Image (cartoon, rainbow, N blue to C red; front, side, top):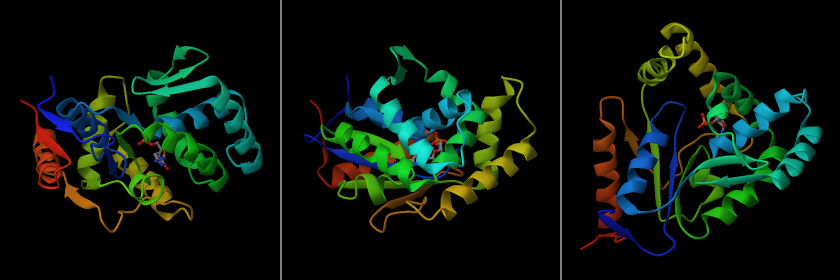
Length: 230
Ligand code: DC
């Protein structure tokens, strides 16, 4: 049972760089509030990894945009992840390769444009949505926006700890990879990663995930967006 009850249709935007803990915190906040959580990074990962698998160039924007449209007919995006032709393919989208391809296709305005409608449609009933441009572009009117960040070293350390069990690369290699991805996500022209002016910034470098969630709950309660359930 959730400890809190959210007002009807509440949308919460959580943006931030790779490894800032958005996914972990969004899931914990979802458990507390009973709201569904939607991970928008999965959509870009899907486009990148299916394009790679089908040998579609990650440079060719018009072809990719057309491809995204055809993908939208065969995928279902839910709180449990992404289903392609009925199979849940979420785990396969979590690879570093899919993340790298995602960050390339995410720089293309035509690709982002095609995915925007789907994101807004699913958010309509209320949700926690995490990504890079949720507070700035996808849900600019969300009554609660958080921008989660952490030092690049700490973000890399977290990612490395996850990778180690899978025979992953060295910590320094992960730092270098994250820096490259940060640069691509922040410097792209269209919908770059940046904090919305009305977002609350939380630096999680030295915080535990449950402390971050407590802070968020405090904000939501003060704004009367959630109330304690009895
Ligand atoms: O959060 P993630 O690592 O799953 O995201 C994968 C890539 O997709 C990342 O490089 C940035 C991009 N992305 C984006 O541009 N906009 C979003 N709303 C979500 C992700």
